Structure formats: structure tokens, C-alpha cells
Image 1 (cartoon, rainbow, N blue to C red):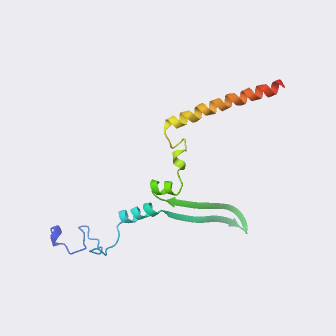
Image 2: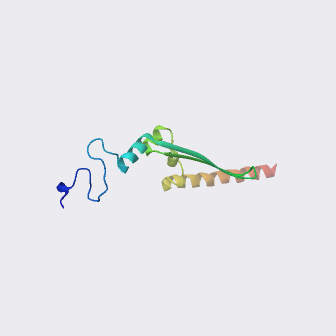
Image 3: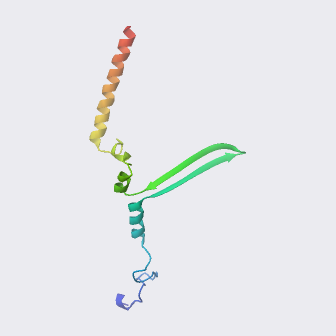
Amino acid sequence: MSESSLPAGRPLGGVSRPAGPGGGANLADILERVLDKGIVIAGDIQVNLLDIELLTIKVRLLVASVERAKEMGIDWWEHDPSLSSGSKREDLLEENERLRAQLELARGERAEQ
């Protein structure tokens, strides 16, 4: 059966979907909209035993594109050494060593007093 002989709105897989411009959105369209606008999901999970709170987990999830997140002022991945380039990590290691040396020097001066 050729594609031209299929009824309108029926793909080869046999799953029906509306034909024409008023048709439903596919997953890629929905994902594009979510990433463009952003979506926030928030929830709390509490575990209680005899009215005693044992555990509370607060979940806050933001799904957005990188560009949209930057517009909102969220860019933590650019400053996280475990996620950014190795050169930034090396800079942090050098700074850490320098600060440790200064701390040891200050401790030595304090011990002399």
C-alpha cells in the first residue's frame, strides 16, 4: 500500500492522529514549548510516624533551555568546577594551595607570639 493511498491522518504505523492544521502537537513541539517558556514542578514529601516528622524532602525542579535559564539569572553550571572546563578547576586548585600556605604562615606567626 503506498503512502498516497492511506487515509488522511493515518501514518504508516497505524496510530491515528488528527489531520490538518488543527492537529495535535507531537512530543517535539511540546518539548520545544516547555524549553522555551520553562516549567516549574514543586512538591514536598513528608514521612511521619505517630505525628512525629521523621523526614521531609523538598523537591523543586525547573525545566528550561539554557538560554531561558540565563534570562532568569540561573547559570550555576558555568561556575561549578566539576561541570566547567579543566582550566577553571586548575585555577581553583592553585588558589586552594595558595590559601593553605597563607593559613600555615598565619598559624606560624600566631604560635611565635
